[in-house]
Length: 298
Image (cartoon, rainbow, N blue to C red; front, side):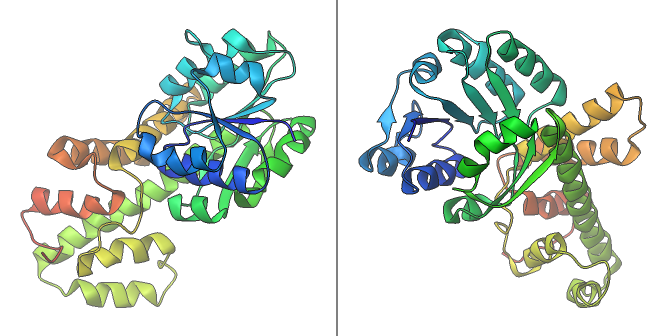
């Protein structure tokens, strides 16, 4: 088997993905400059550590990226000692990050000029599913490129969706994340209004749970009423970034995005209040501050 490169293996999502690629028998190469304790098991299992992305491009046929967003992707691909600095014709780069479609287009064009394929394949679900090899992946690629990487995606994904041509993966991902964050912000706000109005929020949860408004996200957010704030392992800073990407995309298309802007500002406010490094359910904590109410038991 050819060596698979992985950049971002120390991250919450990337670690499980890289672990499953290695467990399925693929020789693995990683870069690890921070959070080295997060990749100690990969190195112990035989993963090779390389000094930079350029070195990885020289040794690997396929390289996965799982980093924070477009600035990090651009640095890894096109920066000094980036993948393109060492790329050979035929290299395949798979960006599983949540990135801006315009940036993805620029990276794809830069790569194509060097005979390199750049595929967008962002993720859904959580680090728990990443470790279990049960992620959802949405892929924007040609039929040929999709066939090339599908066997690798199956190493860490339970559901793989070929959602369209190049770029479609990141567009679908931003739509998905906007819908999710709009719901979570609405639920947190409803809890604050209900608490100020003096109703029993657990009665609200019982009602919603029995009807069409119920959802997995509602159940995650409802657990804040029992003090559980880690039901969705996704930081508010990243949620804010993703919805900003969504509103940028909508603006570039000339589409009004009233709900998108409201959701983005709600997330920006939560981060400004000091909750950026906390997880999405802490939107309820932000609403506590804004409405001067107590919702989460402590």
